[in-house]
Image 1 (cartoon, rainbow, N blue to C red):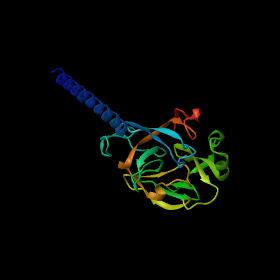
Image 2: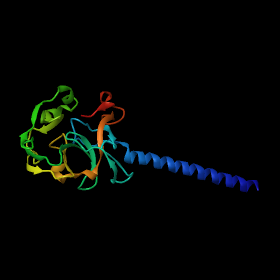
Image 3: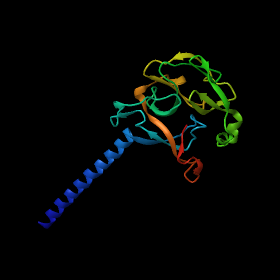
Image 4: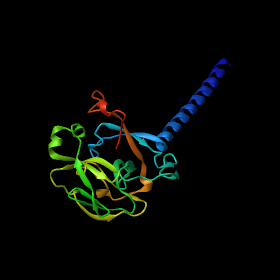
Length: 232
């Protein structure tokens, strides 16, 4: 009798803990899916703004509220703005990517030898601050020009290769409603809207707003100055 009672108590305990564990996992994953998440950056397509080894914070409530584990919107209160760094699912293969919004619905964009033209007007550029450039390896500094792109109200760093690339120019394109043109800040080393086309609004997961932590190579080499820094 005692043995059967112990077994029943053990089963009840396991069921209780199992339910609690499942509920905790569901809450945690739902939070990451619909409210906030982080993303490790494995490539240099957003350099010099985001470096390889940065872990970025993603605000998934920046524009809307989605049903967890889906891209379906329950409510929307804002839209991506020109210059925002967004996380989205690639229209080519569904991979989650990080790029900057360059063109909004209704905009006409063109690129001429890495100089943007927005709605018929050339975007202006100026020399980038040395403290940003100095974070890049010396060999990279020698092969690229580092500039501040004054995209109306959103100036931000970009880097362009000194040698011409196939991505450095494209003819004017007008962006239809519900779509966005995104590009990497590392203009000659980024698979973006020049490669996979426009990004539909429903594919945008949220806005990358900060670097949570950063390391060079491994966690044994943290870049302390980048911890908890705001993305621009």
